Length: 150
Image 1 (spheres, helix red, strand yellow):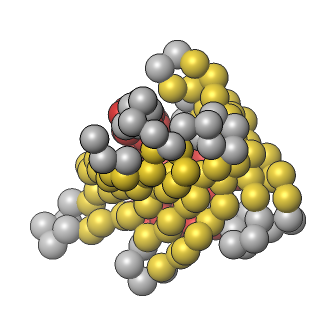
Image 2 (cartoon, helix red, strand yellow):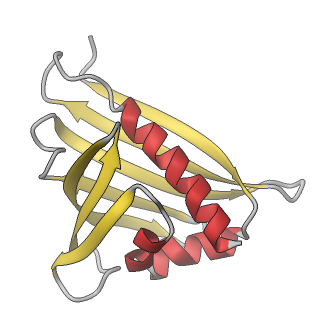
C-alpha cells in the first residue's frame, strides 16, 4: 500500500471567483464565520494572517469529532488563483508526515466557476487510512462558504 497520496474534489460555486480568492488570500481569519464545521481559528505565531512564516491554529469537526491542527501558507499564486497550505501538529502529525491543502479557484470559459481542493499527504505507515473525511469536510465547508458569500 502506498504511503503517499492525493485526493481532490471540485465544487461548483455561485459566488464570484474573485470573492472566493479574496477570502482565502486576504481574509483567512474570516473563514470561520462562513463554515459550520470550522469552530475556531487564531494566530499561533506571527502577526499577519497571510505571511508565509505565520502559523495559525485551527479547530474543526470531521466525522463528528472535534480536531485541531496548525497551518501555514506555503505558496500563493494570484494569477492562477491558487494557495497551498501546509497542515501539521494537533491531529495531523500523529498520522501524516506531510499534509497539504491546495486551494484553486477555476473559472471556466462558459462562465461557470469551481473551487478545487487537492489534498496531498504522506502517511506515517500503512495502518493510517487516507484522509477521506477531510474531502467531505472541505466539500461541506465550501458549500457553506459559497452560500455565505452570495
